[in-house]
Length: 271
Ligand SMILES: [Zn+2]
Image 1 (cartoon, helix red, strand yellow):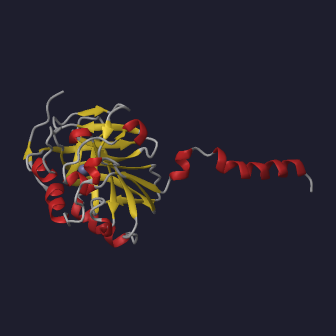
Image 2: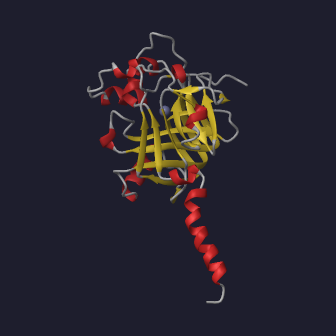
Image 3: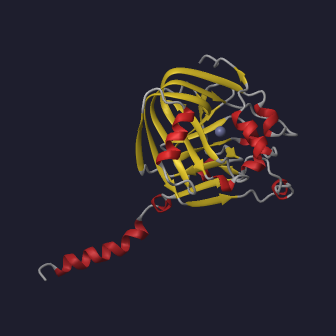
């Protein structure tokens, strides 16, 4: 053997690698979720985890804020709050979330999307081409959009109304020919009650002029990236409000109504 010392050194390094990898790299395939969608449907809008803590679990994701004050989008490690006035705000580490899903996004599949495809068509395309219906997937669509329709929700005061009541009066926003990123997740049907089955997507404009929970969109020139997530971590609120909830009821109809509600169109407040 010509270079025994080098070989020994490399061998040592191999064993050292797992220990020196940052914690984030070890959680690449994990989705971390805070609370459950049925807790939100029941009006549990008090924040239970700070964004300072949430960022330990991911650099990409969606969710909401204490008192349901807007839609959250996390992209490339930055967390944004799209409030009911349509504006995008930076999120401080001390702000808290009652419901969020995050991961360290790593694209495992890339799919170009043909111009003119809408949300429904993209869902059909994914159903046909992606045979991973029983695991979670991180979804990222980067590019320009002919049309984008989003919503946000205003912060609520106690006693908190259920989500369907809030979304019935949600402000909605429409954009045309806008560059941005769609951020979200695919959730398998069998976890209804824990999260939103199917696709749950939020939008953030490149110039931060708007965003929110997506109701509809049409692609102009965009690429879809998928991150297969076969590991999930659920952080449940351990408090009296959560522990006294009746969570055995099937609320899928109520969820459908809350997620797809077209609300009331509102022009974005000018900056
Ligand atoms: Zn949403």
